[in-house]
Image (cartoon, rainbow, N blue to C red; front, top):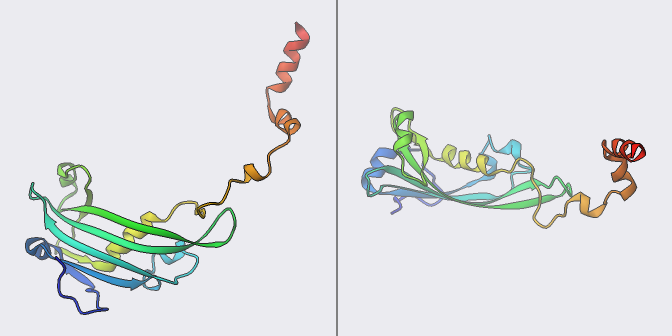
Length: 175
């Protein structure tokens, strides 16, 4: 299903409608350092992203691109403050729509992709968009324990922190 693309050469722009009609696709590899919008979320840019884009229409004649992405994102763990690699494997089916109103007609399991007027998709931008969505808001390395487990608050401190403890004491005195 993949188009003939020379090794190491990722097409910058794809004619999505032509690829849907031909039921073709592309695959490639790009360095993390080439994804400029993603760089601000990463600790460094060591590593590569492998991806494939397969274009087709389903049994309802809905045009789509199935996106497969695999990489490891270097992030800073917010618990340990150490570098870790977040493994990312994305398989996403994007329904190609011409107008926002077409989104309601997409079958379940499809995410909408509003196509430009000319039908041209920027390959690396599409991959980068999905990776940006995959970055967690608060990065934590797998296996790091919550701080509360390491340093539990003393019982006396927990009682002091309860704002209703004083009211409870007054209630006991009145009885």
